[in-house]
Image (cartoon, rainbow, N blue to C red; front, side, top):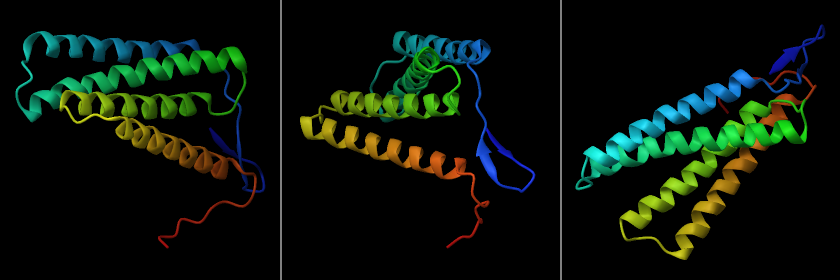
Length: 149
């Protein structure tokens, strides 16, 4: 969470671990898991849309459960780290994307070790960009201008 002081500069505010946020992630993940199980039992994978119906709920439940796990683990490591929830959701989403993309390649009989390396590398690049942007927003310097350049 960003907060402004009397001079107008922004800085990170420490947000403690909150159990309701963890429960909300777990409930969203459980709902997506139930939807995914329903798709698995009822829709035969024959066309692109059925594969999409299979992988979208899989992404949702894996992202929610991974984010909840990372949020819980970060609370055990450091109870008052700034923007723990946002960081956990970002990392869980990136890990879920890498997992689901690789499973999609496996289901299309196109998976190979370079595919894993490329998707994991892209996931690492996305995480570095996310950390850079969150660190840039958290600086106590002057507010950023919102130019299009």
